[in-house]
Length: 241
Image (cartoon, rainbow, N blue to C red):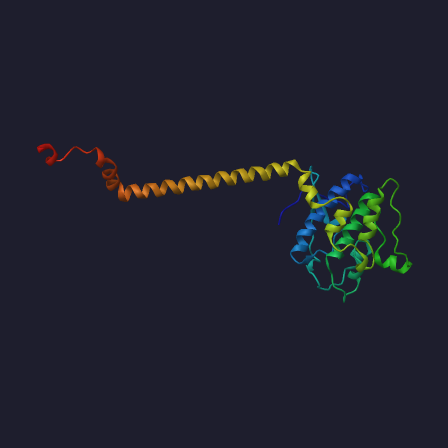
């Protein structure tokens, strides 16, 4: 497995991140989750402690797939994960099935933690208090972000945002935007395409050269005679005349 030099987001010195930085990390993890979900899997343990920040780079990596499983599978969450406030309510019930919306809840809870510096109350605690509403985020957090987090952390999964793409779109962080806003990636893609075109042209030229070489080897003498025949000296009959 790849060794990632860095530290997880739960142990970084600054527990409360600037909003722009937090959104950048959420977009990266959201992209990873989209890939996971496209393979029919659910992570079921998305939280700051399972997100590594590479040393010296503004890049995060989702780690620890110990609780991951196929969609529609059932699992009982461990007590530690429950208490941290990042597990969706349906993951408390061993008879409930996990779906991508379960990771959406955890991703929303992770963003809550990153921008507030505080873990959200657990789903179990929210149910005991009979209050679905989350504690207010610090002043200065955009209302759209607050709304997106509330929609992602809706206790009733039928009312929750169903996909990571819906959550990112509500935050204004579509995956398409990521590729547009990264000129380095665009440059790399353009260079790859250029190299591919050069490779194809080189292959064509090589194939034609080989074909011509084979023709010359097999029919070189006949071809030479054919092209030179109009310029050959007249025969004896012509000379006698």
